[in-house]
Every structure is written in structure tokens, then in C-alpha cells.
Image (cartoon, rainbow, N blue to C red; front, side, top):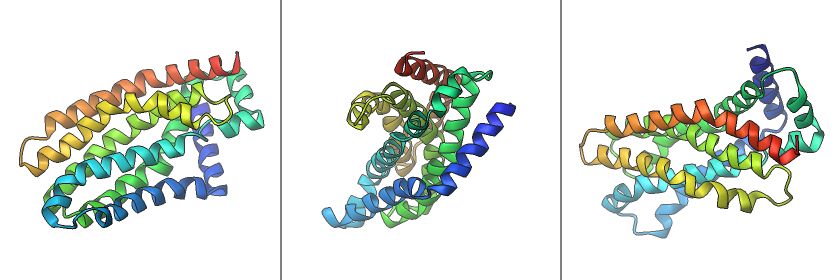
Length: 222
């Protein structure tokens, strides 16, 4: 856990030195959702019906936007090579980077989502479901995206390849995340859908770091 804590503190300090990397995904999320009513008829019923898909797709794209540099800076500065040979299990190092990235990027998305949902005419009664869905779904999106980022870290302009790798894998989280909010709007039980998102999150956090560590070793040739 000492290596986990050290990596977590390092990632937070680096983010404080480059605040744009933290602000850009949040700004993208807010702008995309805010501009959407301008492109369609801004009737309350239409906005309410399309809000689940709009919010979740915007959150998905914002998360993916932030993942390209997750390991690239470490690879360019040589830190990644030292992490691979350090006497610390790479699983905990990778897990710490993902946790730090979610705290800096994912958590602000969760906190600002109710405001955007209210702007899209969502009832106050379903905003809690929106937050719970994003709270369970965004870490899974980051773990899945980090697997793709680990495989493309050594490639120039790997962002397009990253999108091609992870977008199909994002579909289950997107379907169940937007589905939970849709069921809440129809006054149907949402706990089964949230339970599925929780199961996906548990699977991602338990097996994802192993896959990411393997992807980093493959990309660097170690």
C-alpha cells in the first residue's frame, strides 16, 4: 500500500501542476450537454426523453478524451520504464493511477451531472439515480479506456486507435447506465440495473489493472 499511496499522491500533484488536463474533460462535458438543446426543439418532453442518452454519451466521450495522456506523459519522460522495473507490484501502481484519475476527472462529472440533468428537464426525483449510475459507471469507463491506453501508449497519434479499441467495450456500460435513468423516468425499479453496473465495476477493478499492466509491458516490450 505504500507504493499505492505514493503513486496516488504523485498523480494528484502532477494534476495540480497541469490543471487544464483536469478541466478540459469537465468543460467538454458541460458544453456538449448545454449545446444539445440548441440543436433540437427545446420542448420539455423531448429534452426529458433524450436526456439519459445525451448525458451518458457526453460523459463517455469526456472520459475517453482524458485517457490519451494517462500513460503517455510517463512514457515520454521515462517514468513508465522505472515503474515497470520497480520492486512494487504493478497492479497497485496502475490501480492508484486509475483511482487518482477518477477523483480528478470522473468525480467532477458526477457532481455536475444533476445540474445538467435539471437543465434537460429531468425531474428532481431521478437525479439521485443519475448520480448513482455515473458513480458506478464512470470508473468502469476509465478502467476499460485505460486498457486501450496501455496498448497504444507507445504509438504516435494513438488517440484514434484508442477510440476504435474501447468504444465497442463501452456499449454495455452505456446501455445499462442510460437504461437506469430511463427506468427511473418511467417509475420502474432501478436497483437491478444499478446492481449490474456495480457488478461490472467490481469486475473492472479486480481484473482491469492486471490487463492494463500486461498492456503496458506489451507496449514497451518488457
